[in-house]
Length: 177
Image (cartoon, rainbow, N blue to C red):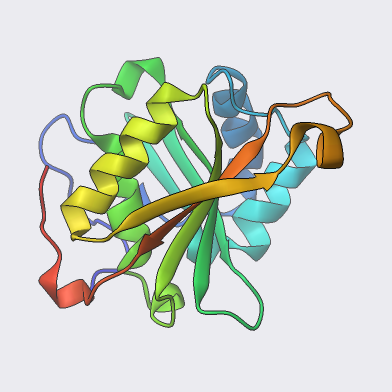
């Protein structure tokens, strides 16, 4: 099972685990990817350091152009994806899907039977990414309101829908580019 993509195809970003020195570059990337929430630089540094096994960076010409942050939910067989960011320089390459595939193929994700993420109804790009990812792996996608606008965000943020994708046997993945 691949841990990092060693040699990218010409023009394709190299996928790898992040490290703490990537925190500032990840933070700068997220700031360019509206409507993603801009967490603190320290948050991205901690993710890159403490959760590196369940995060992915995409690097092209020495620059971080993609980021997936995630973690295994404690005491569950769920891999939660917090953010997916792709630089405008790397859009249209299917990079988001490639990073998600990389993530579910890692040893750290072996126990996951479901991938979960939250998406607001108006985030069309995220819906398209995760629907396409579910099709690529042959997994069913469901969603339901989870963190609600008034109940959880006191009216300051749109309702986040919990998206659940059943993960199939990784040896049977459809490797659609």
